[in-house]
Image (cartoon, rainbow, N blue to C red; front, top):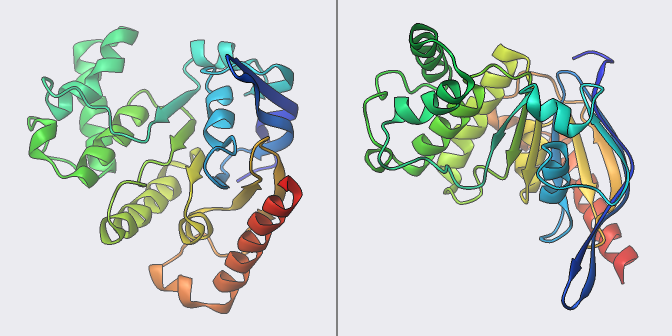
Length: 261
């Protein structure tokens, strides 16, 4: 992790116009994400966590303020393939094998067949799915499908990984296992990760920085720099340091609700 800023939002706001009137999804959000950070965004449903992530990815367009990714607009960052995006659902094409799903963005980008093969093999190894290239999505568990989705986002070697609650639908045991694997992946690749979650333990366990957001209109109520070491066994969740951070996150969530009333 360095002091280099890769994502910078200043006074970012986004208002959706609907038949029932304007919906203020984000209001005056200011945040810097440093290179190598693992940043989790946590807050109640509808607080703008995913909207903020989608602004980074050029999937939504702010109505106020500014946001840059690698020093350029999200549109330019998208065109330069600066990030990979992992959605809540794995989103794998059922008629394509796991290797074929991972290969798809590489095909679109025009990589040579040999380069595609090398990249698919490398990212399958990274997510512990080596040997599953010829399987179809329906032959894999939900957790394995999500790992394949992560592999697809990693296939073109973007420095930034945007993850929208990728483990939310999984049971706790599988989720714990994937949290461990994701931390290991982050440590090995030194990617910058922005991660949306509803889980306080997940946010505290994974992150170097936790961004607590309020109910709509989405604002940042607290930014917590984690003092936890980079290497984190699961049982770190029983330590006083972990519990103290979790309490601060919970207090930030409560404060956000108070401000919204």
